[in-house]
Image (cartoon, rainbow, N blue to C red; front, side):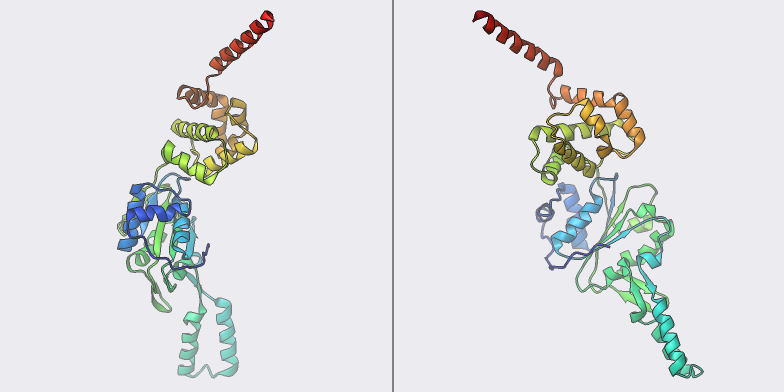
Length: 335
């Protein structure tokens, strides 16, 4: 769980202000995403974000929490996730201590005494709050990130319905807990399974795709500053072409940033087959994808970059070099 210290900033008043708010935290979003986020904040509705891994779904929640100066509560979903890990559990150790103290100091045969002990065992003080419950008990609206919901089991979708629709949670042994301040909820999914329609209906939906070449250039320049401009263009153009290859795991924005920084550390000025193939482990996270590029697709992609003007044509460079050599030889002969 990630927590950011609150500074209680007000919500944006327009779509443009939403874009600017996120840009201050180095998160660049297009107008369509900014519109969905702005409406989500104004309508007090959760956002359901779907898209390929690495397109910035999780980063949106982090940047929004920083921009608003509020807490971020994150639930990383996985198979078998249940209430105890995500919402609450009872402090069994503390309950056992209470029982022992009651046995030693009270007459548990008395019905009223037993009732008092029972009520105390399931009081608010005995609850251990997990992110879902914590998001409902803050004095100001936190950001609640339910990350990769598609990794959790389907029954977990049903458990979330009450929280998303009513901003409350029913605890059988205790009762109802309503949100002090409505959490700003962002749910993400990589679409490895379909999420229940009842849950989607309670959210504003947005599909987050890979950025355009121009937008990715802006992002990489912002997140990996101080690198030659030509290298930015070559890296982003290469990644954009690689995503068209129907790879098992296409590189996300985070991998583009890492690869750019890695190439800069290696003092790379221009992409070459050797440089690309030796650093593919930074860009790609699947061995079959790496083998595919090393077997020939790297050359194809670099050739495409030459055709589109992102890389100089090696043949023309050789001709130009020969011309320079001939010119120098001619001058030498004249002397």
